[in-house]
Length: 114
Length: 116
Image 1 (cartoon, chains in turn green, cyan):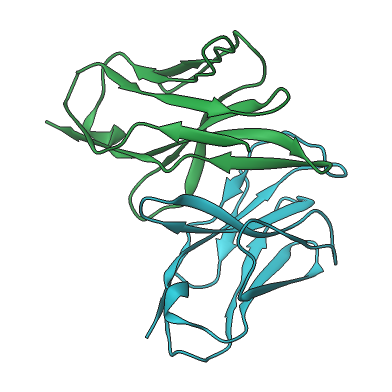
Image 2: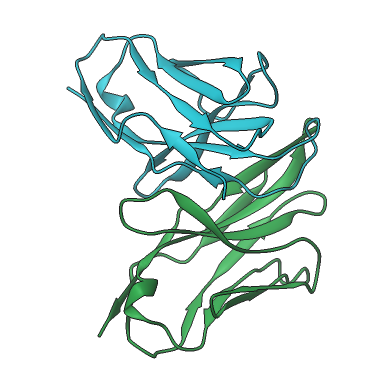
């Protein structure tokens, strides 16, 4: 079935370090791919998205490229800040029995220290 | 900005109680969803609704039901709460025409339910 696999957390970094959070997926058809972020005490909010192969989504310094050949959508940021500490969820949207169903990964917690 | 409001931030209920979790969105979205979030399991879809009075089972509907009498409101009902339903519950909405939309979800801040 359709699924998303994320790297286990927590990921612990110092401020200004480079971030990569790996995400790979399995899907039939042509999914859209998303990264959501959940700050402490809040719900999830969309960080970025890509709807077709080779698209690059970007927002707030974060980037991810839809790689169909490796079925991946890794999240990167060149220089993290303490305020980036949160849980990051990779997700795909795929047509399922006539409805766009969103499938989430298990989330990766990022901790950034000063 | 889309606002999805969940009526309670924290709830504590006893085993066997009937529990209502309420969710309201203010952007006239057609689609609404209930997820539960558990450590190590991510988000799992309980029920969704793509229009008023329409409802569909998600991946883990057992022990839950839903109600969508008005477009802006989507209620999750635990008919007889059990301890394994202790979790964080997240409501979400999405703009959609029919049921084929790839728009992103907009989430509420969650309700942390503890069943003792």
